[in-house]
Structures are given as C-alpha cells and as structure tokens.
Image 1 (cartoon, rainbow, N blue to C red):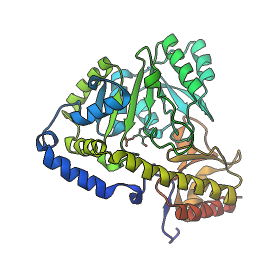
Image 2: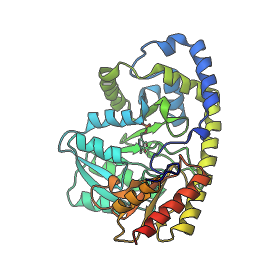
Image 3: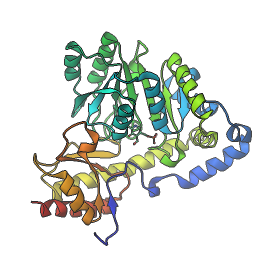
Image 4: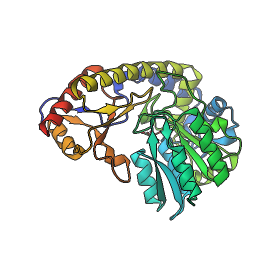
Length: 363
Ligand SMILES: Cc1ncc(COP(=O)(O)O)c(C=O)c1O
C-alpha cells in the first residue's frame, strides 16, 4: 500500500473547495427564520412548494408536473417502482450509471443495452431492435455528459428517440443531473421540452450544482405520472426533507444558484483540461473523447488490457477509479471511468502519473 495521500478518481462528487458553503449557511439561516412553518412541518409529497414552483418555472411547466424528492436517486426509484414490473423490457445505454443497472435488476427488469457512440446512444441500433420485435416500456437516457461515458446526445438523436418512443409506445426517462455543467459548446434543448406526446419523464438534481449532501432532486413530466409518483412518495415518506428543500429554494430565489454553477463549471473545466493533458502526456495508450461538461471522462486502454489488475496496481499507489465493467452488463474490461470533479489539477497530475506507473508495471 502507498503511504502517499490517496487520490480518488472514483467518486462522482464535487470537492469541498468548490461548494458554496458560506452561501448555503446564510441561505439556511434566512429561510429557516423567514418560513419556520414551511420548513419545520411535515409538508406533502409534492415537496417544498416555493422550490417546486421555481423548478416548474425553469421548465415552463405547471407545479402539478413536478415533484421534488430526496435526491434524484429517489426520483428514479419512484419512477421505476411505478413503471417497471418483473419481466418488463427497459432500454439502457451501454455503458450506463451503475446504480441504474442495480435498481432495474432489483425490480426484475429485462435490460436491452444499446451501445453509446460519441454523440450518444446508437438510435439506429435501437430502431433495429424495435423493428425486430423488442417492446420496451421505458428507455433510460442520460443526455448530457453521460455518466460514465462523458458524451452528449446530439439534437438529431434526441428527435429520433422521441419519434421511436411515439411509434413504439414507450416512455423516455431523461435522467439529466449534469445539464447545467456545460463548459464548452451550446446547451441543447431537453427532450422534455421537445416532447409533444407526453412521453418524456425528466429527472434532475441539485447534487452536482449546489451540493450532494443536501439530497434534493426532482421529477418532471405529465401531470398524471407525477400524481401517481406522489402516491408512492406519500406512502414511502409522507414528505421529503422540507428543511433541505427550503434551503435550496432560498438559494435559487436569491440568485446564488447561478453563481454556484459558474464556480463549479470553472473548476470542472480546469480539471477536465488537466486530466486530458495528463493522460496525453503520461498515458498515451489511453484513448478518450474529451467531455464538454460534467464530471466524467471515459478512457479506453488497448484491447486486452487488464483493468482489474490495474485497479489493484493503482490502489497500491494510492489511486482509485471505477472499472468500466461496473457500468456494463458485459464487456468494458479495458475501460475505466475517471471522475475529475473531486480532484484539483495538481492532484490530477500526480494521480495520472501514478496510474501510468501502475499501467507500466503490468506490461
Ligand atoms: C445519471 C445519474 N442519475 C442520478 C444520480 C443520482 O443523483 P442524486 O445525488 O441527485 O441522487 C447520479 C449521481 O451520480 C447520476 O450520475
């Protein structure tokens, strides 16, 4: 084991130095004094209403089309509970967020894994599967700066997915916690905003823009779906944390949200640059597409590389990452996900130097 301080490329979480700590403390103080009844009571499964209304306004929706939850993980879990029964077919991206795979497997879903390309899911491969008889209930899509691959779904593919959803009668679950974290290129319209046939259910989160510990996320979509999700939510917890949601509401109301997003984006941009440069310099065998935003870079090592062994060798040098195979039903054995959200450019330089040393030790 290395005695040097550990460097983690494993966790998709921001480092403490880029979180708006003082601003959150001040927002908490203000809102808890201004609205003790709203913040300290049970509330309803809808969530803290000023926050629900703020979210609805951001998306041009009615409040009835939004539910605020304890993190977007909870939103995902409620939607899956509502829509997925054992044996149901669900489309997932390959690779995709490991927790999505775990949740869907836990519910007994059959998974139809469709490969990702540099501009998002291979929609024509999906069209082929549908044409051949696949009948999914739901397609889980992470459109922006995908976790783990870092890629973004192109506008044409967004349109095509909606066409397929309508033609084959499935719901698109747009899981979008990274949308605000674009540091290059133009923001693309959400599929929720493009949807004309009430087929999109959208989730996002304040974990990646405000802080993960606050555990506030949401689901937005057709009012009937949200009403059904609210029933599950009421039976699960009566209401989410009103204290946490009140703080986020005050944070958004007072304009601090935008400042926080700018801080996080600036840091992520510098970290992405540091990571790309360090990989090119120290680990030229790794190929990758540089993400235009978000937290993650997906690196592929030459075919036949043993990422299991690399995990151990890197661990001995105090460096962690997540193996590509954790994000796939099969394959991914020569890939790795590197999260650059929680490490400074200096740590990135040191960490990639150590990772490269670990890689060479296996040659
Ligand atoms: C694609 C995706 N969905 C959902 C989540 C869960 O986020 P939250 O902290 O809002 O529960 C994450 C977190 O990493 C994620 O990457």
